[in-house]
Image (tube, rainbow, N blue to C red):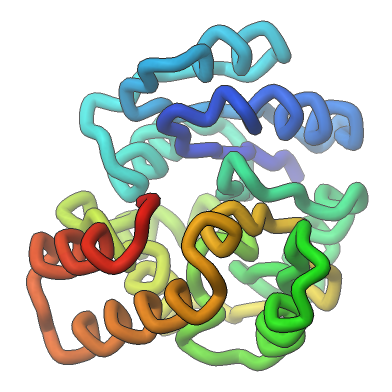
Length: 230
């Protein structure tokens, strides 16, 4: 079984080199490729990713959903693994994903751990063990078989926010979902910039808006209004 890693990026020069190097350093013959699907970065993201050996492609459309779909359209692996540029999976990631599929799962995620000593973020990490809608974002990374991804039609290109939650909920109706009981290391930069309470309030607000059927534009505008970085 081969695995294609797909990383959507936009101005991630600070993180992308470290991630690609780490993924390659801990890879084996099951890694098909690392695809960086860029949304038009103005910094050195593209050059750095290429220098570290990733296949870099420019997505026709900016936006995580569109970029991940474009990367997936070029992927050759049997299994797709979507990873955010500021997240580091366990060293055993390839073995973990393949084992999960061999056990009969078609998709899933890891647990959370943040690069912070904040006890509040330690609580967030503990809560990632619970299988809830809030745990289906992309921070915990997402693996899915190529067959199931194709059967779902991929991410919704029209979505600019909440796209991973929507996709996971939809895909789970067709495939068996696994939470791998190991943590990925997630950047706490959003919390460092805004504070824990502010981020929690913003997340809660957007989830409620989504559940009530708010438009993408209204949710994006509200999120930018609530947080200093998006």
